Length: 270
Ligand code: MF3
Ligand code: CO
Ligand code: CO
Image 1 (cartoon, rainbow, N blue to C red):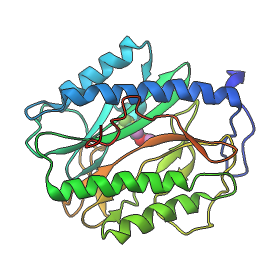
Image 2 (cartoon, protein in one colour):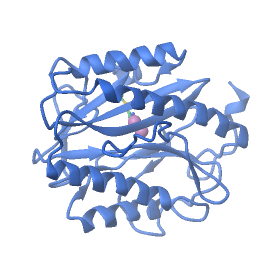
Image 3 (cartoon, helix red, strand yellow):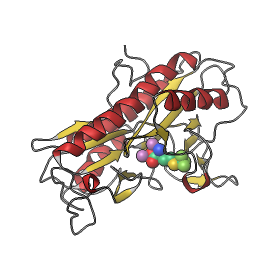
């Protein structure tokens, strides 16, 4: 047992981390974000998602880090790559990207025992109007959630901020997948729901670490998992988008561990 990774746990099972733990998360988060920064130039029409995954794995290894997803519940890849109506957990493969495809690339690394988990949207070729709106709303929804993070607020406040914003744009929030506590483990309490009622759920405290990772659909929120047991798609085949950051609660608000060093978190900025 590594003593540096232990500390008090709340009644909801949520670990409270110490100042030194923030340094560990900064390093892990930064690497995950840098890998996504560097994968961007490899996303183009005709590229395969297997090749993108191979490059991600190479970057993880070159950094002397470990992939959190390889070997996780039998998953065999360093990334999840979810194209168009795939909501999350898309498995990299030989399919080539087509003009106008939108894709989420999700990378989780382990550095010195700390987990950095982030995902963002990329585009192959020319971005369509509807896809652009979806990406815009999903990105902004993540930040509405992040802005609700401060001690004394609740997890329901985060979900409510995201849901009300997304539904205000006549899009829908996926209910079947959620964010999660993380730190020296990949998935820990609580489930971070991207919908909900203000003032409900556990109270946020300084030192909590978790992800916020809303999945937003242009159509209905229902999903189904394909026969491969991983790939989640929208039931109505509508387009879906997702952005994910790993966050820590600070005395006055939040720290984002997975900010893009290159400033390219949003695909059409920078
Ligand atoms: N990175 C994903 C998340 O945001 C989890 C992927 S698990 C995998 O929680 F096994 F599918 F890679
Ligand atoms: Co996550
Ligand atoms: Co992730």
